Length: 491
Image (cartoon, rainbow, N blue to C red; front, side):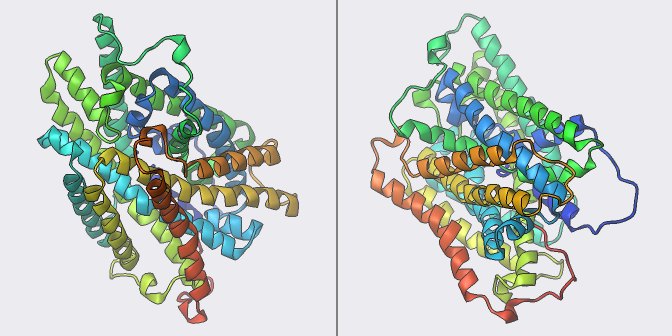
């Protein structure tokens, strides 16, 4: 999701599960503990840790609030939708609101990846720099080159229909999250245990972030993206023996695990690296480099960097095929995209969509070369990614309420408690986060606020609303390229 994000590995599994026709076979159940671990692996990541480490002890508050007002409503609401309507977010929103709204929802689920890849690969570039030369972490040219090389290599691999790529993401939880995260926390505690002073104050009066006006609220926006992608995991609710009791248990267990994985490494970084020296992209490697130097083991820094890079690249490969595949299937049936973008290569892969997306990704990557501060570019792309994805969640919450009212007796394997209230909280939090994202954060006070707003608005509203509107207005009956019933729509 480091997507998800959305999160890596969850999209292909959801698409495959939704696409399978119903069969009269014995249901293979999974335990709620297994579902909790699956959810944790698709959401938890170390990538956002440097962003929150800047705020020291206050990162607990900054992670906890979005978990309560966004992660919890999203999880429970999407579970009801998945247990009652197959086909993913497109079918949910189409049935609840309208087909154009359904197209907008699945478009946003796809379009967020256009800015997600540059931010993810920006993290890869900064991490990889510590394998060769740490000074490269602040180089925009280096970052742009790594983004372009990694993305186009991923397109080449994906376009060949390579099987088993999704398995890379499952190993990423251990290789690139749990082992480095646990090592960082343990060494951080040893660092403090030796009598070293924490770089960030750990007293109770620092539990809440310092208030710097509305700009302070922008911090929470980035954490919404950290928790996004739960609608992908909701497809597994039908695999529980007793969804009504077991799914909430799985969600609360995964929430606890995710919070631990998010919060403890962020705290460990704040103990080691002073906030004013922390890079939003290379902060993890800064902390590892500093802590290894403290214990005379700096030779381990490149090894940790390679582990983080491998996990991130594995996640990127699994995401390349997922959202674009869902958009392709819907467009072939409904005619939302021109035939050029619907063509498949000899391996049955939507190569034209991936290449077109790659051209846009390349242009975005060049921004790293021209924006003086790599951390600023990383933050801007993260905010745009979050805002585009939040449009989809707004539609999902509205659709859930409408479906409950229009089809109260429709069979559902799981019924979310107080659904209207959950949707109200989730909708309000998502809308607030979307609007707050246009406010420059406190770190950008010295920059040009007008340029910041223009870039974020152009990216989020242009890509999230204008582009799908133009595609919808330009659609033609001849753009439908699949026979009715030939392939079930999934997204």
